[in-house]
Image (cartoon, rainbow, N blue to C red; front, top):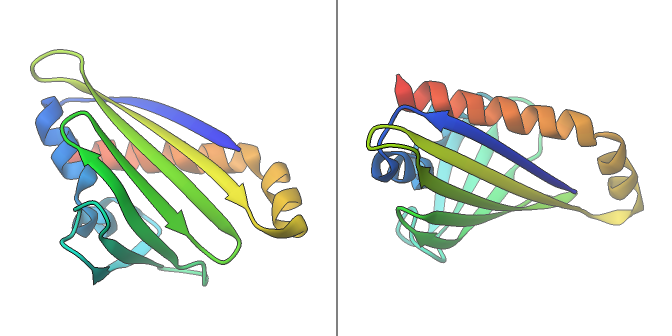
Length: 142
């Protein structure tokens, strides 16, 4: 299942890309994340890994930075017990002081029950993706 969300943010593209690609800031804008825990590598560098621990529930994601071609694009993979999410973030300049974040998330659900649940939850997943990007916009512009 794929979800794509675009948001325009009042920041230059380079600043937007640097903020979004920095995993140490995750808990500052992801409303449902309690903390970021580094596992290996330099935070944000390709190949680095970290854990995103939720405030509620037990779906801990282990994230791997796949690529960081700043200020153009970042790619990450999030792995949990029941789902893998491939994330591509593209950073586009709208003007010298305004940028567009295009976030694409591709969900791969594990097991038959996960696939059925993912199919039934696709609208809720897209809504949650939109909420996350709006939360990032508030953080970045704040």
